[in-house]
Length: 279
Image (cartoon, rainbow, N blue to C red):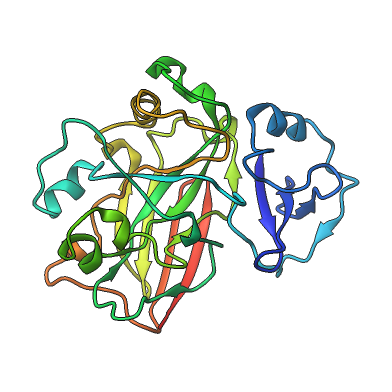
């Protein structure tokens, strides 16, 4: 099942896609997709619902982030082997964890806003995990049972803030609209093997990232198990699982986003995003 949120910024409503690709309104069945409602059990109940009598929404309606009011937005760094090599970093021995501010989350087609003084804003297509059950000390074999679904994420990053300003990476990861998310939350039964998904990203029509989640150093189940040993993951928590090679920082010469650029990205089966860069 593909769930989504639609409508103006700050007033999004819950919906889903039917088999014909129509957006169906779920507003009288659930208030919104938030940490209180994004649970494996709740989504399973909605997936069993007959959609035929639900209102169809105008396909031109804005799509919001597929998770509303997220409490935690985690991320994994250097998690693709070829990406680690392009940035001249060794493969990490354990997952590199950091956070993005939840205020960075925006809709999949909302603009990327260059922060004041930005000179090195970069792109990162990523597979996103959305947790669906309280998760603590789970094994790798159990881990996928705690996933509500997956989504497409652009982990937009200001590299000068991230690397050259000292401290932790969160400063370069958290500006407004640095977390485009969605368009859909896709349940695990539709995704299949999360370690066999194609990820692509283009800038102004030129493909710069084209890889597979098979290149992950730490697969999805291991990430969840590992993190659950340090914190309790909760429904609605979002985890961006790392980006493949082809980021602007790794190109030669390096290339970063400027106002007017168009960024388009997708993760196989999880939907596409399109963002215009503005100052």
